[in-house]
Image 1: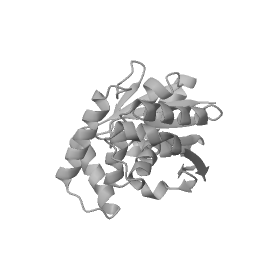
Image 2: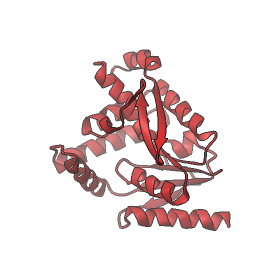
Image 3: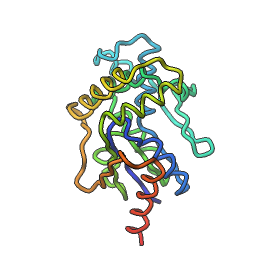
Length: 221
């Protein structure tokens, strides 16, 4: 059994790196962001303003989120329906960022993740994994790079997905998400003392994953 926790800023490449790492190590990758996005999707589909924290928390018991893994890939299930392909628009990025500020939402998602991690070797990535979800993980990493580089990467992904959005819009969204993530009262994004910080500015995802594997192998002997 091995547990790997990865935190980092939005757009730093956590999900892609974790996918590569999971494939190379032959273990599961749990994307915590997809769980928050599913929660945001529930609010969107039920016409609930994500800024209305009281109402979001009131309906949370009806928001049943789980995951299944097919060929090593996570599929996110919302109220019994696979919603994986609905989760990665800019709208869902905004909704997930807003609802993730609420303590009850974070507690619910934390327990979903911890339940999955109990019986499996796993990689979990997000924004409070090293500090809250898996504080005793065998390995902890923090990925970061400049907001300008992250905006360029994010723009390419959105354009590829068919969205009409500008660089300035993406940059503004990421700056707002960074502010929410680092200043929220509940479990803000932090770098824990025992995390290995990796600047991904000049590295592609495979280089980052290879570096992580080297660290893991060196420490495990």
